[in-house]
Image (cartoon, rainbow over all chains, first blue to last red; front, side, top):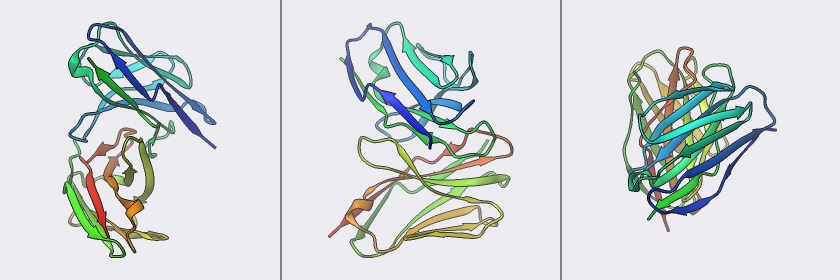
Amino acid sequence: SQTIHQWPATLVQPVGSPLSLECTVEGTSNPNLYWYRQAAGRGLQLLFYSVGIGQISSEVPQNLSASRPQDRQFILSSKKLLLSDSGFYLCAWSSLMGNQPQHFGDGTRLSIL
Amino acid sequence: GEDVEQSLFLSVREGDSSVINCTYTDSSSTYLYWYKQEPGAGLQLLTYIFSNMDMKQDQRLTVLLNKKDKHLSLRIADTQTGDSAIYFCAGSSGGSYIPTFGRGTSLIVHP
């Protein structure tokens, strides 16, 4: 069966520090991968998605970036965090075929001080 | 693009049925999903329905789809305190692999 792992679970970082959140998927090949942010208002904001190694689409301009160095690995990064980057970050995967449900990781709670 | 709307809160008594409603705008939506999010956790896929179906039942969960009104509902029978969570409706259309999510309905179950 397929599993998705996301870490760390919680992170407290000072303003201006770098960020690296990692997500890996097991039990499937060529997944579509996604990064979402969920603010206090509960809505999900799609940040990045990827349909293959090295292929990244950005939905929202910001100081975050994403990379996909391997088929089942998706990384969310920042060189300098802002206070507004605080939130709950969720990684998800779906089958390469369209109209398949997304499956989410457990999330990372990021607090910027 | 697709727009998905949900009411923000629902409060029910333990043992009653809960009905969470969702409306969507894209008539070509082919897959509609329900997710559950417990506090501090990710979204868990509960169930999904294809647009060529009117109803889907899975144990205590019943999904009803009214394509004419573009209305989707999730009924939870015999609601328990463990059902307290945020429930998200989502829909995708055509060949898109990116669903549109509603803002979520917070279900509060009280004794």
